[in-house]
Length: 264
Image (tube, rainbow, N blue to C red):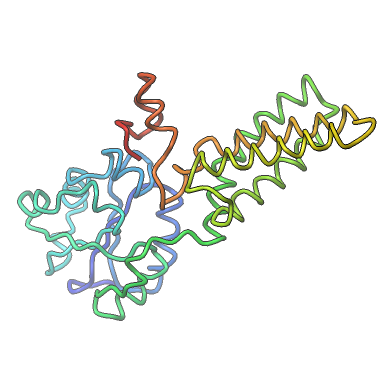
């Protein structure tokens, strides 16, 4: 757009996918966008892990010199940044007020049209099918690809089966996530493991001459369920991680950007 001194100022994390999505929805709007330094981590994880804080916001306000471009002193941050950003500290250090906008970037145009007021839907965290598949592919595909490379070296005869089973289970597990029995996370994982194990036992006891090949497929499926669902709760914006508290108890305490202290 063509922002001027009266235009709203938005802030987001410097996670590449987030920046691309936010800029897509701001493309034809007259506003400014500040990219806060969060270590390349998305809004929710950075806010919970101590990477999207008041200091991140203070830093980008000062380095961007946005105060010289607009007359208003209101920063609009993503709602999911709220757990990590001390709005009062930002105000004391910069003179800017923090206002938390919609959860999803797609709602920003309507949010601006509403005079920077959120509707109930804009406040609600959702995890629709498109987002589930997006996260599932992003999280599980690299791991499955690595296993595929290892299989290509040591068990090349199983490559096609692994690719088909892996792709099918990934789509099934993330696509039907809300409908899989279990409160969340490992409850759902255990249900799927039990279901697959029951299928294996049924095959062994009900078929007169069970094939080793079919048995192998069942065992492969059980392994893939574990790989895809290891942190089945933590990958969602709705539930806490089951893996993080375990890592904390084991003394690992930190993987990637997030410090695990028994919380998601």
